Length: 417
Image (cartoon, rainbow, N blue to C red):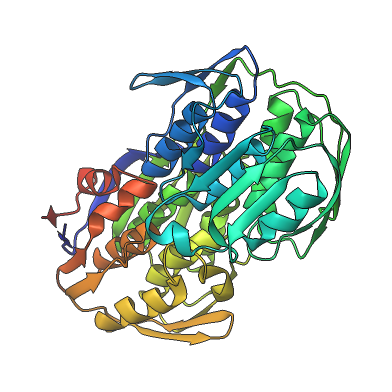
């Protein structure tokens, strides 16, 4: 499906989508809450969240969903041998550790871009913790046969922190205490997100400067009611659209969230946009935009919308963290460079740096590369272009934010299919 986004003046208010990062984690926690029912309020039903719910159901959870809440009765008792993670890297890496608690073989697989995302970091730590684990030369599918015994293991955090989050969630249920030694950890805020959720669920993990984690075994999850917070990652392209094209208030976001992408407001302020913060979100308004620098190493999902922002800033901006974009739904640095150039953008990839010189973007046709973050970033850039921008395969936004284009339209953006 192709959507054409027209230059527009934005004004209005949007409620942020629910966080898929939180939704997937709390779904796994609810599965592990043996014999208890968890009520999730403000749930996310994007494709990645639905994948986590599907996997939790295949692993034994009983799930009932309405538009406003999800009830999950916990209990690890797999109904089959294959777990379909869709295209969600978090789902596969997180549930690889959870599935390893079970003493029979389970296979985690998926489709599309997930099958080319690296999972080699899963194998050795699980083996050190008593699990038979095999991948396809470092890529999915992942086969695990537990049980996860606990003990000591070394974890590589260079490519992703998602598997570490999975271990932090699964090891509290192991029979023995565990110690994880972590090398080159990236995306620390996402680990903080996991640790905060574990604390909310009555599970204790000791964090020693993100280099060593001590996890007592034999713990239990106690959740009850849990509200899924709003998603700063999904809100980021809307904030950028406001900064280049009008004024938007976005509510439903925790100012004290552990989510890395709440730093979007810092970047917008550095670029000269008017930013008014509130306890439940923020208002962003267009102003004279100037070049800025930003280190997105720990928040790589911000790079696509910030690249769109930089295209409308006077001067040359530098965005650090481009190397973190290689193993996503697409090679995002290359995709951003290619598609923004189609619109007249001046984008250069210099190792770990995206260097972008601002100027007027033209209309035209671009490709999403099947990547939700790329599609949303291009839409944000389009609202201040000189002509309409057609985005091919725009429906891929359903991976994280199914209502993205509807929300853009609600604040005055003209969108044609």
